[in-house]
Image (tube, rainbow, N blue to C red):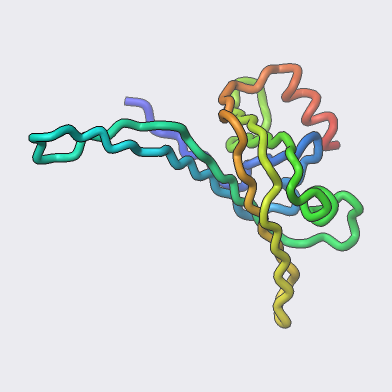
Length: 149
């Protein structure tokens, strides 16, 4: 029997458009929430249900970088309310590794400045249309590695 292989969160790569924001992120979560329709007819003792359209939210957060002109403030805060493409590579980059791409509306953006710690941020992204799952191609993985150098 093959041992299961757990993905470690530290390997996650997140991009908004072409901007890799992974260096500023330390948390992310994908939530999918379908409509559930009650189609129970008379005479039933238990409800009968069917699934409907799926809605999704993607929440990300991390620490604020004041020295970089392409940090979370510029990539997210300056574009609240706008449509963007999001790429999520939960197991890092490399040929055959999983990748999700989806459109999002950049939603609620929050910066928190505690007196005794670093400035942090969170952003709620509303998924628009379907989440496309695929294995990363050889060329895409190679270009991502080259771009991150």
